[in-house]
Amino acid sequence: MLRLFNTYFPSRTVVLAVSEAFLVCLTFVTATILCFGSDADLVLTYQYGLVRIAVVAAVFLVCMYYLDLYDSLLLCNRQKVWHRLLEVGGIGTLVLALLYYVYPEAGLGRRVFLVGIALVLPSLLFWRELFFVTVRTLRPLQRAIVIGHGPLACALAKEIHDHPEVGIMLMGYMNPAPDRISGNGLPYLGSLEQLQELVRRENVRQVVVAMGDQRGKLPVEELLALKTQGVFVRDGNELYETVAGKISIESLRLSWFLFSPGFHVSRTRLVHKRICSIILATIGIVLTFPIMILIGLAVRLDSPGPVIFRQNRVGKDGKIFALYKFRSMYDGAGRDSNDRPAEKGDSRFTRVGRWIRRARLDELPQLYNIFLGDMSFVGPRPFVPNQEREYAEKIPFYRQRWTVHPGATGWAQVNRGYCASLEDNAEKLAYDLFYIKNMCIGLDLIILLRTVKILMLGRGSR
Image (cartoon, rainbow, N blue to C red):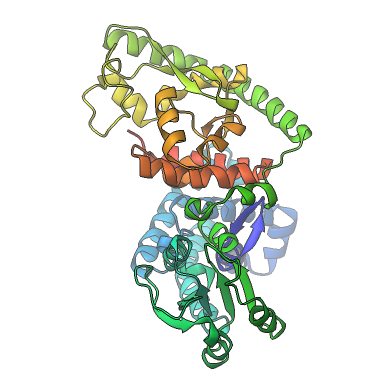
């Protein structure tokens, strides 16, 4: 796993993305050589051909990202990958055609473009197959065992199974006591007295410690001996955070907040984030003001009631602030429902409200909240006070969300989507804690890019 902007990316996926960008460039360079022959070097060097080809590669890479071709759920699904690559070819061609129409100087030339498009799709299909065959041959899955059988071990087994690109194969678990305990989805391998023998016999490369209570039970000397022999001994919480991009709530203790790295943001970084929020909010208000006028007129004409809906939300340090949105429900629809979360097909939506919620345009007035300093662009999503009180009473460490400004979007929103139940919000807290621990400008940029992707594809709206 590669760590970039305090976020972990599977090294195989990163190498795949970089190699495919290079492959697209190579394909269009080949097309240029086929079309121009000995004059190709003049086209590539003196007529900015390489720069134009780099633009083509960037467009294809963005299309592949937005069509989830680097998503762990699609990486190993050959049929869906082939189908999505065909979509990439069609969408990429349309985007480039539009770009060349608006800015003809960026064009490669009709002949080079058509030859390049004809070559790029078969090349990408062939490379995907060859890449994964090569990776499986040169870097087979590393065998790993888990010490422990509690909630963390269960969660780890599920996440590693759902993310095969991390390159780990969990063989099973071992207990401090010589008894087998079912329910964690892993086969029982024996007691800890058999640890060293099992590691040697099965060629285990990683040992993951996922015990809830390690005092007096962890075989420290055996683990140190294995470490000196080249076995990678890993902390279960750290591996879970690396693979899942969230914190394991079930195994958290207060000491983890005190001694784990993270959860510290310098005052300078907070000032920079606030300045960026003011600038971006001002630009956003100016650019979207005509759209907001039209939406306001549509809301007013569609149903009686105020155009702007104001609702109390819990912000930083538990302070209450008024959040602004375009009204998407009939006036007074939420007063008798105890701020019930919106549901699919909710009868409280107006005709215009249903449309602006689907496009997320009802949240444009939150730019004013960001400008005022009630919110940031990125942070935990704020909820109404009665929901926050309920979650704070029932979900451990929930009040940690209030240590930073809430956001219009966040790590939890782009990974988990809409949440309505207590269990949903407990998992959402796991993502929020990951963001608070690793908060930085780079992570904010990643979240904003993912938010744009979600908005463009219309996912998760209600």
